[in-house]
Image 1 (cartoon, rainbow, N blue to C red):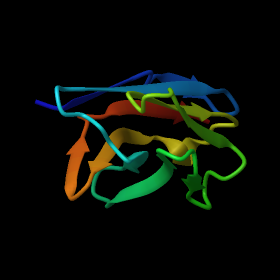
Image 2: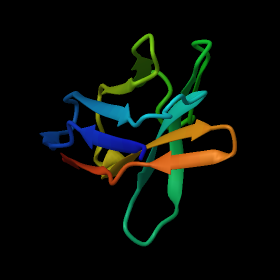
Image 3: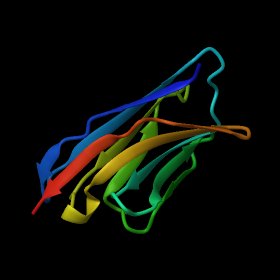
Length: 115
């Protein structure tokens, strides 16, 4: 069974940095893309950053220039380096992976940025 496990969420002050990690595992795990989403209670889950198996990356406008997504060679682990954090970045951050038509989600890690 495929699992995605996030880590790295914390309480930080505005302007500080955090690095989130997501480890994917499972006997058939072979994603073509991994991504990060975030969700504030009562709001929709929003795309933040994605990375494809060929290394192509995409970012939401709200995080461009501040966040960087990266991965290991085997697409088993994806990272989200978050710099210059703002209070509005506070949310639960979810890891996502797609493998053909199948999508996987982690359970999330909480990021709280105080002003």
